[in-house]
Image (cartoon, rainbow, N blue to C red):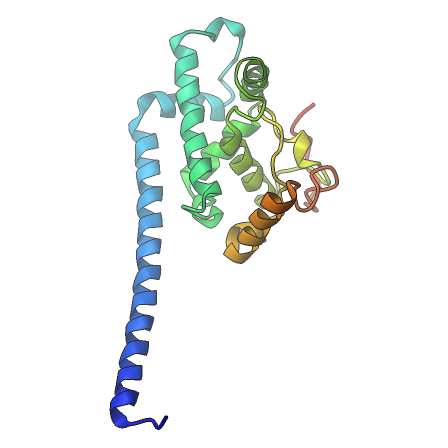
Amino acid sequence: MSLTPQLIVAITAALITLITWALNSRSARRTRRSEFIRNCTNDFYENDNMTSLFMDIDYDRFKYDESILGTDKELDLIRFLDYFNMVGHNWRRGVMPLSDILPTTIGYAVLRTWKNEEIRKYLRQIKVWDAERYSSSAGFLYFEELAIQLAWVCGRTPVKVQRSKLLVSAPPRRALIGRVVDRYRLSVRLYRWWWRVTGHPFPSEENHTLGVNAPQEPLEK
């Protein structure tokens, strides 16, 4: 088939349309991600209970004991953790990448909250409750997975620590295989395909470690 001037013009127009659509789609995705982060940040700051609770956590003023169970204080704590769990869920589902969360107040708050020992006491209690009443894999799993990923990227995890020992409120379901999985969608698809086909993590949970070179003090005693 010979290339007539009309055919060349049609092909060129189609290519321009395709490129324009791809660029616009990319720009729209970035805009949606930016709006999502902004909305999450605004929601966080507009809730006085959450900001007040986080200030107590950040400055190590928050104390957990069984006296708060069943009170408004526990309800505020549940809402607080569930908010971060929602952020983690959106990260896990690819709505926003880790690179968008890392340099924000939300990212800082997630990591600081997860590293707080008083919060970890509550998460351990949640693990017991969920195992008895609901499911051993419930809890604030997405919040913890996001926090672990942030800790790993920031170099705040110990050397060669198994991820299964880092999760507090729920057992591990997937291996933590690094920023490349979060950044490159092809790797994510390959990982999910492996998980669905084999029913096993890739690589195995038992042998996978976090390869952070800089030594840090243990997160758990």
